[in-house]
Length: 432
Image 1 (tube, one colour):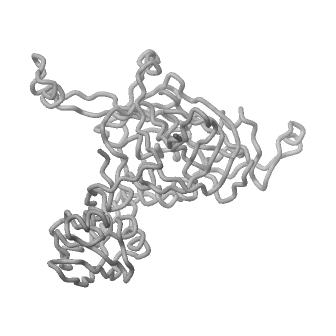
Image 2: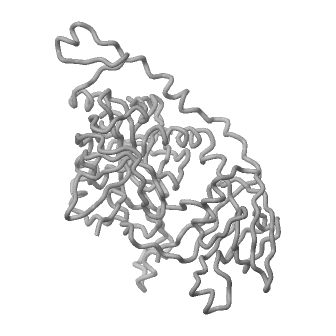
Image 3: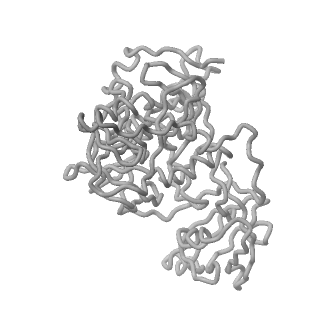
């Protein structure tokens, strides 16, 4: 069976990849220092445990409640826009007669580069991203029924996994995947020189699988291109750290195999670029680069099968840019509407067995959520939304996502043997 996989190196924590929407299926001073290569000498020999999503299986189990706000928070004082960061990029040189003599072709103000030139241009901006988790040893060892002497009150920070990232500004802003840094207590970035920096998480978004980090210093950085200009068959080069720092800066080449591929990974519907450039565990968060040495995608997933190869996927950079911009300015993606409840799908079989109605059973709700303030109650069964019949969480989310924050949104619920229509004002989804 074909599986879509996140391809971070070595995630061992038992976590999901975050909410795709407010309803989520729950699965059963300078911080720089030098890290020697020896530190990673056995990384490729570790057991690699990757979260795998089997696309043919859809579970209808309990769902979680997300955060929300009725009013958007103020933008942080230290916020910066993506345009400001990338505005520092110098205009590429036009090709000259000497360039033509060496086989360098120009397109507008951009040179078509060879693969070695692409690696030389972008490689220094590609970094390793290490996710570290802090455990309380009372809990960590206590689950096995014993606690070693001297470990009663200690915390231990251990490496949980690693992936890749790309520096997008001279002052150290880094883009990577959300699933690379998910659940981290500490995040470290390792540059191609081997220097390690403790990173600050500026913002992350589980739905689009993107995160922005900040490290302090001055760094080489990559230019963001335009994925909307891509055509099938164009050169695509992936740069990243498969299996960790031992293979840091690995360059693989291929083509753009397809545009606008819609796939579902871990209950997230994503529209991605498809490439046959080799993408392996640890490449997550690294750049996919075009023939001009511009980042046109963030590598994020692959299809794993004994019968298939060369099916890798990247987040198109034009889709990523507004997300990155919001993360830079606010730390979260602004303007997403939220109802503010958690629910469970009630199937026709369940409805008959328990004398209920087919719909979404409201199982949890925050005291000051938009739904609560409008009169929704735990135990209500949502049967219609926006004047349309709904039977699943996905159908409810689809209707909600057609609206904006502050819109009126009508719910028809079954309560105590009677139907009731409730109008709510959609709030803004906030990070938990």
